[in-house]
Figure 1 (cartoon, helix red, strand yellow):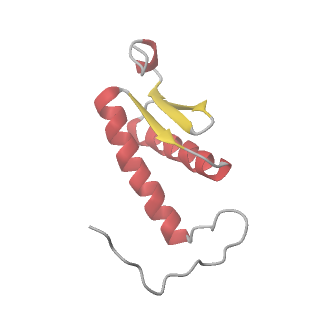
Figure 2 (cartoon, one colour):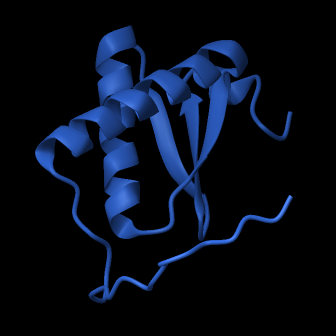
Length: 99
């Protein structure tokens, strides 16, 4: 199916990311907390994309919140240029994405 787009125009943008409002930031962190937390609970680790320093800081804050929530250390480290890896401290020794 082909959809024609009428009256579509490019929106001018400034260089760099558009900052989130406080409410958007809270919803984003809440969604990440839930999604990443569920993956860690199921597998003991989770991989999540992070393309900018701002996204990496946000994910580090999510890992800190998960650690406080569970009372167990959730480690987060850069896996490559565009992804971070979350692991439980004690689970990192026995099972990980490469195990």
